[in-house]
Every structure is written in structure tokens, then in C-alpha cells.
Length: 107
Image (cartoon, rainbow, N blue to C red; front, side, top):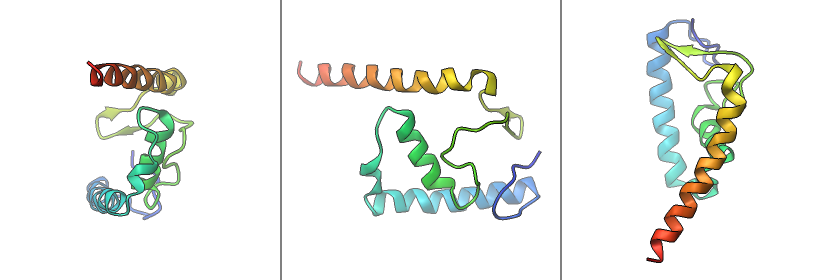
């Protein structure tokens, strides 16, 4: 299955190459422009921001919570049935990690 994309690429290898090239360019831009400072570290909102930034030129769903199960090659992303719980867990994990980091900083 080829992910529906804005580039209208229907070959998995071509899509992977285009995605790699574009997302690397966008990652560099994210740092060079200092837009990385807009990221809410340790939150789903932060992950969503980065995902949209990197992939919005390729996929309509970039940065959005998906509504279907998807796979890329042999890798299946978190099943839709568990997605909401997984995303909620990200925020919990992030806050716990930030708390541990700030406590360690003052030791």
C-alpha cells in the first residue's frame, strides 16, 4: 500500500526517496529558522508540530491525528484502536520526564 501523497507518487521506492529528501530539508529549515523553539517539548502538540513541519508538503494528514490504520513497508504504526491512549501517554511521559530532569538539574 502506498500512502496517498501530494506528490502523486505511486512507487514506494520513489516516495521513500522523495520523503527522505524533503523531510531532511525541512528538518534543517526547522533549526535554521529557529522554529524549533516553538515546539512544546514532551507533548503530543510538540510532536504534531514537528510532524506537520516535516511532512506537510508530502501528506495531507501531516500533524493530524489519523483516522485509519497505516503501514509503511512491513512496519505498522500504532493501531487506530490504541492510538488515542498512546497519544495521551505521550503527554504523561513527557511531563514525567521534564519533572525528573528539572529535579536532577538542582542536585
